Length: 210
Ligand SMILES: [Mn+2]
Image 1 (cartoon, rainbow, N blue to C red):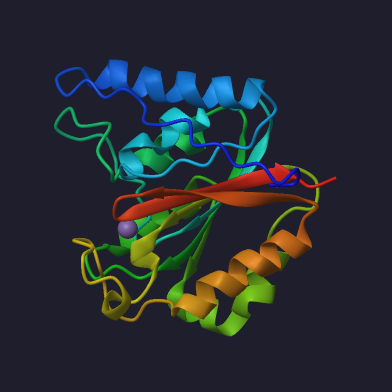
Image 2: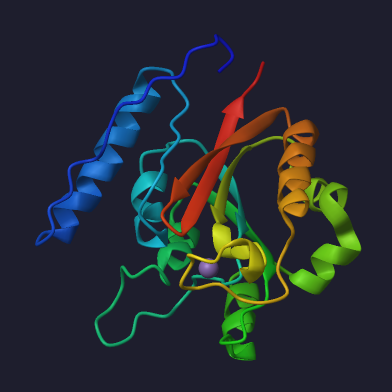
């Protein structure tokens, strides 16, 4: 965008009966884009693909994640790669510095699920705390040095704004809350961010503006 150029590189090849190969393709395409010096923006899928994108990055990254849900599920019943698992994988990667999860409010979350994220050294900002901090307060949580990978699930927005989203929850952000949080984050850190949007969910990540 700095050079006024946006290129659509098309879809990652999906192998419906081979999830691992599909994930490898996601990592490979993201890496290829990074090697060209471009800022990748991924659209589509859900949070099951986020860690496959993240694995393409070598830099140390802080992660800010806007969502109604932590997507930090434990690995039970041999399930490790659903859209509820992405941030358990991301948090365990060696280049992840810390997660900051914003807008968390799911009626389906047990307290233990939030405590699990906190016990891993990460940060959870429930929706009521977001309202106290505001967009500038959220931006101030970002470290000034490292790049920041920004991941957005559209269900961080209030369910009245996302009628097609199966995971929608009440009491969410308004559009301007999210927009202003992203804008403030971009202003706050010199290494800032652009989106990945996935079906009902999306992610965002950083780009060095200098
Ligand atoms: Mn969600």
